[in-house]
Amino acid sequence: MQVKIKRFDKSLALPAYKTAGAAAMDLMARGEIRIAPQSVGYIPLNIALQIPEDYFVLVAARSSLHQRGLFLANGIGIGDSDYCGDGDEYRAAVFNFTNQEVLIEKGERVAQMIILKREQVELLEQDQFETADRGGFGSTGRH
Image (cartoon, rainbow, N blue to C red):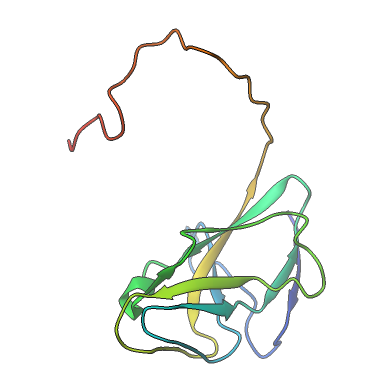
């Protein structure tokens, strides 16, 4: 599949798979960003995308982001296929959970993206299911 991409700062590399088995491409900060303690900051990720109609972009934190004192404020990000304008730059909303300012440097890899196929579903409302209850959230235990 081919995806059209626009970089806002061409001095930064295109997102890329870093290994042959990588599922996601790393995204990097377009500029230096300072995130105050106990607050949300927005990191521009230097890309706009035009993906096919039946696909979406899942943006997740890189596994090392927490080591910087940050996590994605919204858990994960979703980029819909119609978020595709010339100025529709992807950004990562991050929460600084420390008591120190966190500095993100230009070009620092902070998030990763996977482009996935989506299928819209039709919901069929039921008053009752005929299957037995499993026991609630976390019911399978720790083992």
